[in-house]
Image 1 (spheres, rainbow, N blue to C red):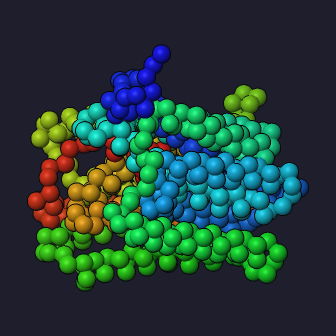
Image 2: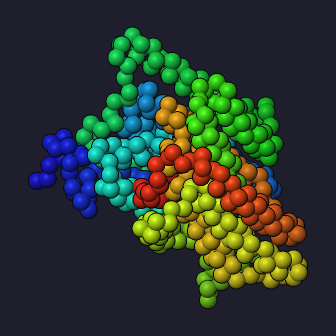
Length: 528
């Protein structure tokens, strides 16, 4: 009989490919969570823009795309309060459990929309998924790190295995939800995503205690019992107030007391997120007590923040504009079988699995040759490669306009676009978190992690606001979108490349960069 985590240290066990047995629990839980998340995200816009008579909402494309942008932006931003609540109230383990429950309920609530004929369960489901992901995502990654208290290469390898689970789940999720959602019914597509998360919840519930021991069971506690009790009460009151406000908005919107315009809300949300970034950096520079060298490094973080936001604003058009392009303008016929549009979303995940080890090897090989590429230049390279991906899409977009929509273009165009976008992601995303930790003053490391998530959140909302421009009724909008996205990416890459040398001088006291395999990006977004 094998020993469980209560008999031996979870970190000392070697029961999962030479890694702690607890990694298998976290691997499978995260795989199913990503299966559900990436499974429904591109399905959302197809469902919302489908005519009511065909089982959808019949929303205008810009409106539906804005909703997807608000949803995705909120998911990334929710990691900040989710980690805060776990640290102060639930502990990592209970936060993951509660998060998985909320996500499962959210998926099933969305699935019921198709059968109940009401929009309310759909939006309630999105809110539940946002809340649940905020509790689960940052805290499950934290426990993975806690399995390796010694750090080093073994920890890096453990995170690499963990991220392979992420990409496996994302790839499979889009294949299953695409097949059922587009071929059988949207409710079935949303439902299978919920079943996937339910499997992850059951697996975690049955395996956590036996494989993780006491890791993450307790929240961070203050030495003074009265201070601890006061902090818990304050956290609970903040949590209850937040949930009450969200519930009130949902009820008022459901009964028609308030009307929510997704595009207007999305626009104000983008301004709000941008303002947070500006105010935060202004505050840090003015009142943060930074020394000269620290100010230079925070300035570099600000530049990288802008670059990352621009990159994600382009990259995160995958579930909106590029998804609609696959649906309306791409020849998806393979013999007698029409490939579901969602299957093209899995291309990025598939390429990540193939090329992440190649990029890891490339950085190591360059390092052995004493060719050390700075973080700003990697960011510039990532922006330029993503720009190539959108440049590729300009030609088929113009073909559609010339033919007045009478033709459908080869799927090769989308595949090539996703290939170069993946190359861009692998150049930029892995060094993002690493740069935040290396450049930020020690007392602000946690806050700089939040800045990285804020960049992703801002990029997602911008992507949602522009992603509805692909429309068979307005063909001229498609090449314009691809062109302006390409220009923005190339211009940003050029500016960052020119700044790379002075930025490198600002970073000269930072330790030499070494590629860390734990920073391999997950599919379609920054590691959370």
